[in-house]
Length: 145
Image 1 (cartoon, rainbow, N blue to C red):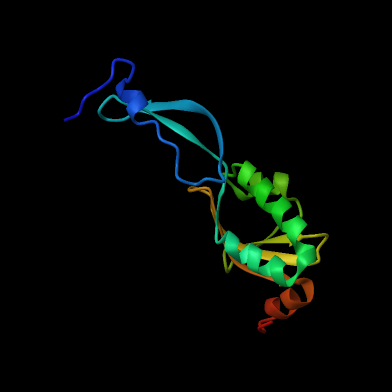
Image 2 (cartoon, one colour):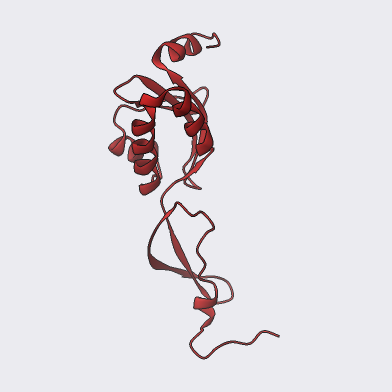
């Protein structure tokens, strides 16, 4: 049985927080009604980082990388980026390898390189690799660190 409380309109029944506990939230912004005439709400703000355990594993091996990686994660999750240009506003030293569709971040004063794949339409960053700068140089020349 679908019972509706008096204070629950069709629009508020659709209001859900995504299950990502580390995400940041803002006041809902109303979107255009769907084909049923129900207004849905866009309540998610920020970028979802896939595989943050990769960050933890790296800083366990390189303790000096922990603070800069946490700072990067906090900044990337707080932003919303629809294009490469938007990303460059917050990360001016980021590089893009077009043939591989990878975005490279300088971390910790260029001591570490974070290789990611970004899906702007879904606000998702996939962590591919993290290297020291020396390991990155070897990787970028076609070798394996």
